[in-house]
Image (cartoon, rainbow, N blue to C red; front, side, top):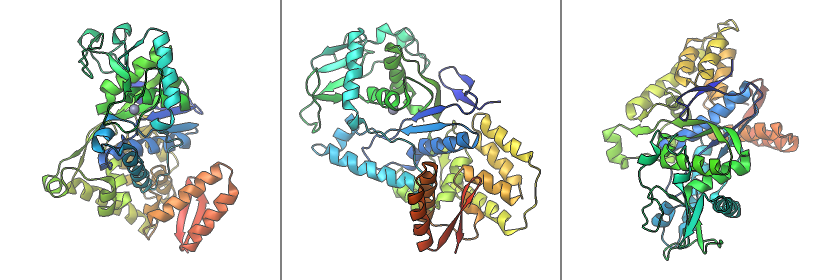
Length: 424
Ligand SMILES: [Zn+2]
C-alpha cells in the first residue's frame, strides 16, 4: 500500500504514487522580517522527516523550502534597510534550522532571485485575461476562477475582501505586482513600472521553477490556507497548470505556558529553544504531536519530551532483546497512514531491539540517542554533510569531512540507515 496523506483540497486521505515516485514537495518557508520562533520551525522539521521517510521507503523525494525575502512585513520592520534585514534574518533561519541536525532541504529559493521569472508569469496571466494593471499595480481577476474558494472552503461569491484598494475591479482581487512606494527601499523594473511582486505569486513561481507545473505535495502552516495558498492555486490553474495534488497543512504551535511567555515575551525563538533544551528533546516534542494537530510548547510538554529521550537512551544501556523483523511493519504502517509520528513513537517505546530502534530513530535524526555520550550538534552536522556528499558521489569531500569529524574526536561509521557516530 502506498503512503497516504490528508489533503486539505479534497478533505480526505489521498495516496501518493507508488515508489519510486517521484515525490516533489514544496513547503512554504519563512518571511524573513524577524528571527523565527520555534513554531516556525515545525513545517521545516516535518518536511525533513517526511523526505527522510519517503527516501527510506524507496522514493525519489525532492524538498523545496522557500525564503520569502520580499514582503510588506520586511519593509515595515526595517524602513530604508529592508534588504539588509532580510539577509540577516535569512542567515539566522539557516543557522537555527541547521542546528536540528536534520540536514537541509534540496532547494532554498529566495523570491528576490526569481523576479524575472515572476514578471514573465504575470505577463502570461495578463495575456490570458486573468490579470489587469492599474496605476502600477497588477491584480488577479478572481471572478474568472470558477473554483476559487475550493481550498479554503469558501463560496466564491462570499470570499472575504483582500488588500483593499478602490481602483480594483472586484474587492476579492489580489495583487500580483505592487508599485514601489516612497518608503520601500528595494524595487525592480517591470512593464508596469518600478515595483515588486506580491507574496502569493512568489511561491507559485518558485514552486513551478524548481518542481514543474505539476507536483505531489504543497505544505505550510494552517494559517496559510487563505489567502496565500488559495491564491497560489488560482494563479497556477489560470495558466492551465495542475499545480499541487496534495495540500498538506500543519497545525500551529501554541505557547501555553503563562510563566514562560511572561519571561520571554510571548514567543520563544528557535535559537533560544535550542539553548534551553537539547535538539533531541525538541525533536521528541515535535514527534509526539500529529503534524496536523496543534501542539503545545510549555515547560510541562518539554519535560515530557525530555523524559521520552531518557526512556529511549535507557534501552541502549541494557541488553538488546532481538525482535522479529515483522514488528517494523507496525512502525511503517503508522507513518504510511498520514505520517502518524505519535503512533510510530508509541511503537518505538515498546522495542528493546537495539538495531531496530536505531534504524527507526535514524528516520527522525535521533540516532544520537543510541550513543552513551551526547553527540555535539556540530558533529552531527558534519556527518550529515558527509552523507549528502556521498549521495552526490563527491567522495573527496566525504573523506575530508570524515577527517574533520575525526579531528574533533569522533568516528563516523556507515550503517544501512545512514551513519553512526562513536567516540574515538
Ligand atoms: Zn508560500
